[in-house]
Length: 456
RNA sequence: GUGAUUGUAGCUCAGCUGGUUAGAGCGCUGGUUUGUGGCACCAGAGGUCGCCGGUUCGAACCCGGUCUUUCACCCCA
Image 1 (cartoon, rainbow, N blue to C red):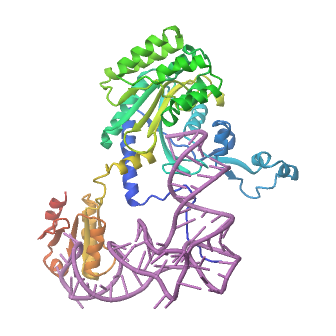
Image 2: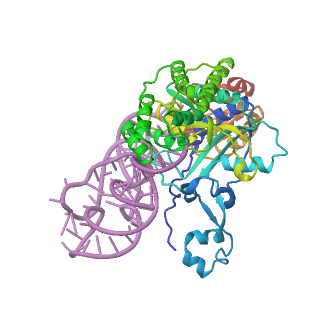
Image 3: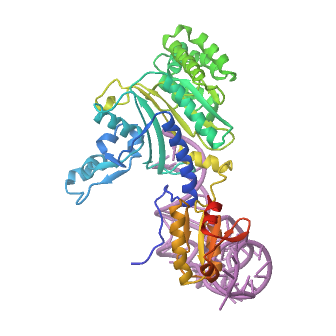
């Protein structure tokens, strides 16, 4: 057997030390914010039973599920007839588990299984990888992290306002100043369908409108015709779609007037107004937040507020999004659980911060000092110092083998360690320690307490 | 899933219409310097040209397949 070059599966990535430092910075910032707002962390297994996963994401989604072959003789249940009927008939007999496709469905499963133990409203966040057998592209991977926070078991619009606050807090910490949180309400879209004389067709309307900034109004109009919208309907829609965006107050006034004959639409507008009002009471301003009545988001289960966050001037799609849903757990036999949730796209946020050069001070090693030494006795002496340093809470390491002093310094330099302690015969004789600042090149000899004072 | 696209040293990339021994910069190793890293100079190592097959006297270069990368569609974070 020949030795082949190692590789990793398509659409997966390794994260080296620098990437991990940066990813952890992103994740810690987000976790910090979630905890500050009272969310508790949850984890679920990488694999779920296929029955839990299938049928939740549409036909497309089922195809994108990674299935896990049964252990042992996975063909033992398969008959010749199954084989002749092809994959759909074979699948349940050779696979009963799959990798999770998102965090929402496992969460719904969790809520149903633990409904009697949970305290509602239940606020949880969950940060774990998910897998999709998609074709990879820039910013799209087969394994990627989702970072979800949801509140279930309450209709309160305080949750919506808090989501806006959390998004703003996270992005402010990252130093992002050019981004837009687009906000809409699914009820406004429902009302829109009624107002243009196509009631009940908001689903089709959403799918088409969602492509507006991508393909333009003319193409969207064609698609609407194909989906059975009348000429009159698209003519009524046009002024709303082509309306130049101005302030949130102006947009709200425009749509409140427009929706006056639609009960649902009016409720949508009222909810939006209420969210903004709560945001204000919570001390949040409307900066970065834009009411976009054309924001649809493809997902069919949203029923109230919808959010999407885009960073301006970068060629990367949305970095965060979410919305309110009425019936998260219905498919698992627990109807009436509503909630609101959103998600940060960690991988995309990474790309954005990278592209904008916003990762600055993470290159420095967390190791404060490295002990260099000139021989076996000196190294042994250094081990004692190392122990004392660590007991004092100073991140430190010793060059772990006897080596040329140059090699040891190069190592410390490459790891961007701030200080070096040099142990030689002179230090051992005098009991003093030579401490060198590797950034400035300055060096002085002192006792251990002096070193501690310098390093803390 | 459909249609394109990419692959040469650890990294970024040259390599002419197919023609001797595939190059550069950076990085790496050693030395100038056996008590000191970054800078400089000197020397050196490192490549089955993604993989498999085909055409040809001869393939990094042409053809087919495959894997990978990137892009558009679909969908999505």
